Image (cartoon, rainbow, N blue to C red; front, side):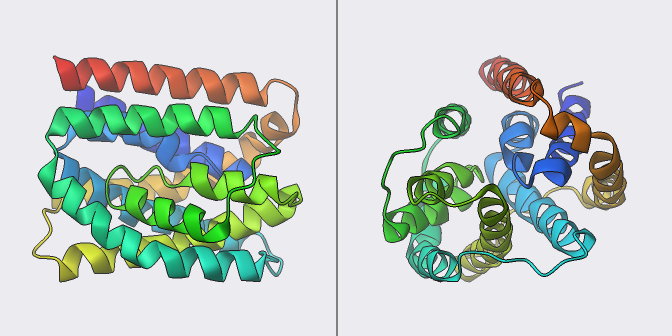
Length: 237
């Protein structure tokens, strides 16, 4: 039952990110971490997150315009953070990592409402790198940096998408070069890859209106809260 719920959260997270460029790991991570061991969960989320973000770039039919200086700086500082995150991932118990996922999601909910924080790109990148290989919820520090420098919504979306792709590559390299990573079940992975592709198409068509409406924030918040609560119950039971 928990694994089925995790698969649903992956599909729903994909739909939300297809419409807004943000939210995949935040919706999927709590339940995926509850259903799988921590390291296979990180590997699965890195792989599917890479797929989601590549599909986002390809389906835009326009040239992305990320804030290049911010993106380069954050990715450069993310590299050592990703290696530090692998150490934490393999040292902490499963429950501690599940709680860390919850904190990451809560941090994102807060970050979406803070527009005056001035987080340097280097610090944001270092934190994002560490979060990539521990909980996969690497969006909040980068979002805080971009909002703090007054980036436009399109710039935030494009910069995050480019950074998410770069972080997936950095995370995979850190995991592989630090030892043989534990991988998720192959059948599960092969089933979710086409499901994510289909969910992305549906999300772009069906969720765009929601993303532009006044109820989007409430829906996203509710989905995140439910995912966190179900994930925590699964991890602590």
